Length: 101
Image 1: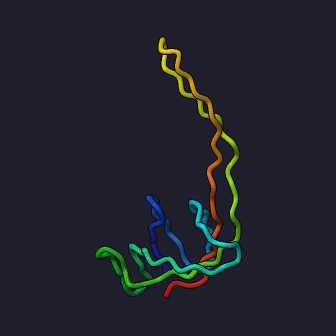
Image 2 (image 1 turned 30 degrees about the vertical axis):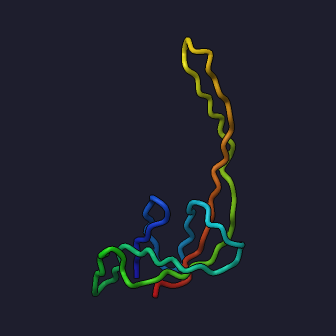
Image 3 (image 1 turned 180 degrees about the horizontal axis):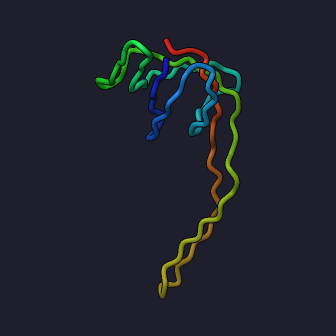
């Protein structure tokens, strides 16, 4: 079975045993989570489409929490003596799909 689910503002396609990188999930590593925002689920025989969500859940295990490399952000307004510089590291979570119920 293949499912499409929503996490924050992005949509992801997954099936059993896939490893997916998502935006940060505030849970411990090696804990199991349930994703209930399933938009679509389908296999060879039938298709279920959202209204607003399908009555399926995705069981996943968190493998790793990590951060992307540091990027420099620089803002400036010409002729106004305004400039601002800061750095940003986006946090991510890597999950493994265990089952689609």
